[in-house]
Amino acid sequence: MQLKFYKYQGTGNDFVMIDNRQNLFPKNDTKLIERLCDRRFGIGADGLILLENDNSTDLSTEKVDFRMVYYNSDGNESSMCGNGGRCLVAFAKSLNVINNNATFIATDGLHHATIDENGIVSLQMKDVDEVKIDTEYVFLNTGSPHHVTLVNDLENYNVKENGVEIRYSDLYGKAGSNVNFVNQISDNHFRLRTYERGVEDETLSCGTGATATAIAMNVIGKTNSNSIDINVEGGKLKVTFEKADKGFEKVFLIGPATFVFEGIIEI
Ligand SMILES: N[C@@H](CCC[C@H](N)C(=O)O)C(=O)O
Image 1 (cartoon, rainbow, N blue to C red):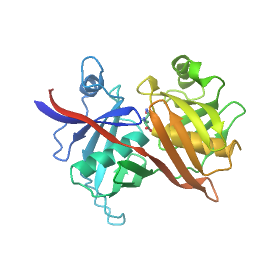
Image 2 (image 1 turned 90 degrees about the vertical axis):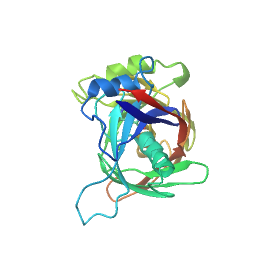
Image 3 (image 1 turned 180 degrees about the vertical axis):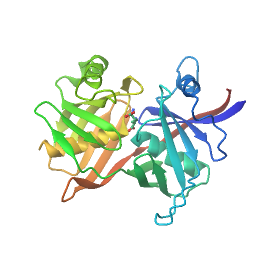
Image 4 (image 1 turned 135 degrees about the vertical axis):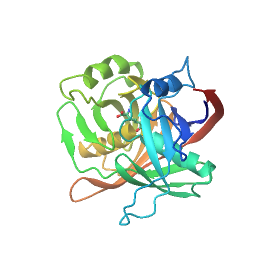
């Protein structure tokens, strides 16, 4: 069978995109998804995303433009991917599924997003109502679980080695966590490197990780700002949010989402 695919990247976090509105993709074929994401034997990506019709019949929710189904490069379906969500909005626009505004459903609920004329996607992330603060780290869930810790000399830091240790530690059990290593550049500006579970390596960017880092830095008083710039290895992201009675709301992840190439692969 021939499979049409599109490759997108958001600050270097890259994804195979598939239009699955006809429901033809073999969604339970973990090995196939892993192979498509393989950088030597496949297309190469940190994850694979299906754009699907939303068939829910819940009349209480607003009109949904599409559904996002996300898989890590290990082939397993996982939790929310912020950069992937931004790229999916750009993909949906290219397919004429949306114009410049999107409402879509993902594993963590409903998302709203806008895309501007320069391809910058502003994606509303889920509200955050619980933040765990430890002396060494902050843990929070921004759609995916994130351990956030400040380190010195981030440039030369061994993200993979230290990331693996924390990801598989007793702290997070079988489910594990993504792990973010952070340096402060100025009051509202941070540098971030992320180890991603499911990719089991450092990626060039992680959107839910950048979101978690921005909120974590505010919570521990490293910044009072609610508009935070994050330099990741693959570019620049911005995160904005508002403090709520309990936690954080109106959380937005903002950055570029770019088409790379398209093709057909035999599966
Ligand atoms: N790259 C993503 C996060 C993807 C999910 C993560 N690997 C997990 O399984 O928790 C992002 O941009 O948020």
